[in-house]
Image (cartoon, rainbow over all chains, first blue to last red; front, top):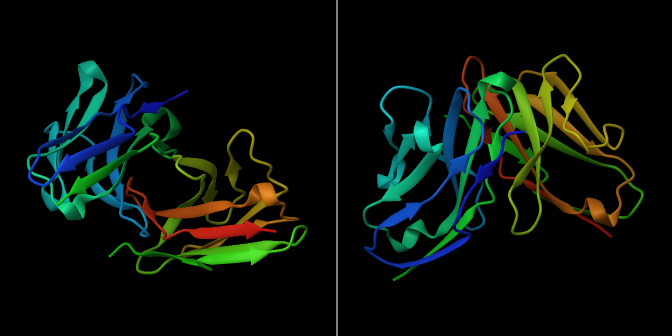
Length: 115
Length: 115
C-alpha cells in the first residue's frame, strides 16, 4: 500500500528564516504529488502540484517543491517565511495504479512562524 | 474557481440519530467526489470515493451501511452518518475532482459531535 511520510511534525521558525519540509512516499510507479496547506480555521488549499516535466515546481505564495524520483521525495521549500505562513502543511500522493483516484496524505507538519 | 462547499459546517446530534452532510462543487462539474475523515491532530483518511451515478467505493474498514454516500448529480454528493454514536464524532471533509483533471479541491469540512 502507498504511504506518505512527513518527517517533521512541528516546525517553529522566525520570520525571514528559510523553510524546508520533508516528504517521502513509498510507491515506485508513476505518481502525482501535491502539497496542501490548511490555515487555522480554514479548509485545505492546494499550494502546488507535480504531474510531469520540470521536477522543480513553483506554487503560490513563494513556495516551491522539488521532485527527486531516486529519493522518492517531494520536499517543500520557501526561502523566507512570513508570520502568515503559520499553518499545517500536508503532502499527498496519488498513483497510476489507482487510476490517480486515491489521494494518500502524510500526517502533516504544523508550522509556527514567530514574528 | 474550483470552489467546494459543505453543509452544515457543524452539527451536534444525539446518539442514534442520522446526520446528512452535503458536498457541492459550486463552479465546476465533478464526476468524482471523495469523503475524508480527520481526527484531531491527524491527517485526512479517505473513507470513500463517490462517482456520479454509481455506487461509492469504500476504503477498507469503513462501514458502507453506516456511512451512506449518494452522488446523484455532477455537483452534489451526500454523506449520511446513520445511527450516529459518539465515536463517529469527527471532522468530515469532502473533495471534488473536475472532469479530466487530477487535482482535488476540498470543502471547508463539517464538524460532527454526537452526544
